[in-house]
Amino acid sequence: MSKVNITWEGNMKFVGTDDSGIQIPMDAAEIYGGQGQGVRPMELMLMSLGGCTGIEVTHILNKMRVTFDDLKIEVTGSRVQDHPKVFGSIQVVYRFTGKDVSADKVNKALQLAEQVYCSAANMMNKVAKIDYSFEINGTVYEYQPKQTAN
Image 1 (cartoon, rainbow, N blue to C red):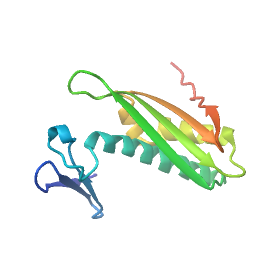
Image 2 (image 1 turned 60 degrees about the vertical axis):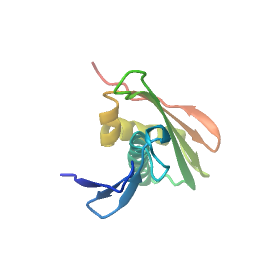
Image 3 (image 1 turned 135 degrees about the vertical axis):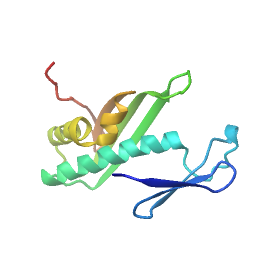
C-alpha cells in the first residue's frame, strides 16, 4: 500500500513526504495566493507521468541492452475549461541521444511502458487522451502503439 503525508507550511504551501522521507514542496498559483515555493499539484501529475513512463522505458531498454547517453522527457497537458478542469489531452515527447539507439526498440519499450507497466499512464489515460512521440539524436519518429484486439 502506498502512503504519503502532506503538511501545510503556511499560506498555500504544502510539503508531501513519501514513506522513504523524500519531500516535494507544493504551492498554488499566484492567483490563489501561492508564492512560487513549490510545484503546482497538476504539474506534479504531469511529472509523475513522465517519471513513471521514463523509468519503465529505461528499465525495458536496459533489458534489451540498448544504451543511450541522455534522455529528456517533455510532458505538456491541456486542461478542460469546466471544473474540475482535469487534463483533457497530454503530449509526451521522449528525446534520446546516443550512438546506437534503435527506433524499433524504443517504440517497443514505449508500448510496454505506456500500455502495460506504467500505472500512472494507465490511470491517467482513463481521463485524458495521451499522445506519445520520440526523437533519437534530433530525428523525430512517429510512435506506433501496439494494436489491441477488440
